[in-house]
Image (cartoon, rainbow, N blue to C red; front, side, top):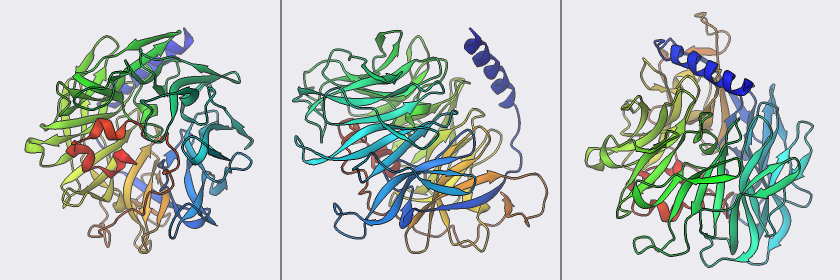
Length: 491
């Protein structure tokens, strides 16, 4: 009962906060660096800023990657805290690791290679892991198969994800040979949550009430439109898996894993994601509001996806405009979809993340080449702000993504150097004084030397050996111009 009271108190606070008009934003930029190699942030998981201002992510070490053909390095999960970048390491014998999410207790979850090769598919095995506050790493195990991955952790330390069993599966996702099942890990043990009737399921989100969202096959019969069995989103609570249905098509799922997944479910049990419509030729964003599945529509086009929902019930995502000419970030609030636009000079944008106050961060880019150019922040009563406005003139970084924003307004993202390398960055809100002597800049500052940089991401080699990354992506997004235009959606 205490937890429910806190939740409704937070909702009242958020309702009042939404009435505030946008204020001048001031930020100080911090380059988080790497673990000895050229890049950070460019693995399967983007940098996450936690509620306490720490940052987790993945960064290159100085060790060459034997599974990459050129200029690649072994990457490890990192924790940046109070100015220090810490290597979280791997399971003994493993080479690579990713940090996926952290809770308010300082517990971090992710994946790590264990040094073994999966004999069924011939790639390194990955295991769901938990890094404790003292830095010790715990292998969460599997459900009898060779691989597992943790996707989310709540503030009570409950962990969810996907794990393989040892049952051969003719419908296994690319890179998997046996059934994948949604799991809940707590009190040292992993529990199989079952499915909606088909062989496979993943748990992608868990809230502080212990409700779990995920995706499950409903049968084992391939559909004529996709060649793949039907899959639906689910909400699991108190031992029961509820089928949330679809918007008429055969494929529907809560958004993402890791970065988006934790915010695809709020503490009211609301779930967001994307579903195909009848015929599976188009995709719309959906919201499960606790009783029914709502089609949130688009910005005039035929495709869209919802990526985050906060406890106020506001939804952030992206959708195509009329005739599918462009993709724009949106905020859906009280039945209305608000087009957030783009940074001046760009034609497309994508929302990555939203906090409790409905501040939204993402990337703005050119639809013509789908290359991310400018990270942005947007808040109610204001307009989209280029994060490069907060980059001091002496810096050679170009911020291409605003990846996450916490409830204190701190932003983690990606910054590109002139040589094409990427570093994780953190933007920390400043006080209201007008002096820039403390390294702070406000949104009215000119964006010199950044707006016209055409940037591109290095090859996404780090996630290639982890078959759990985006298992439903290819089947759900086939022919979808929204996904084609959004490299971040297939990261």
